[in-house]
Image (tube, rainbow, N blue to C red; front, top):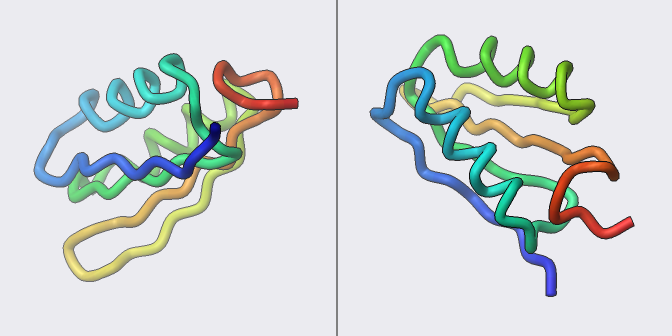
Length: 82
């Protein structure tokens, strides 16, 4: 069964939010997207780069101190059902 997972990476500094996201992707059982909540100001740029290199799509939205990041996983990502 697939589900949408959200990772709470608030107050964690680079590289932890990215590592937490990679771990969730590698563990599988995700639907087509992964949500990540961050407060590190460099995280949106880091996830833009990560998504481009991994073939994913990313969007993010500033919500006060927090940034809500959504990674839409490519069909070749582990845990993704074709």
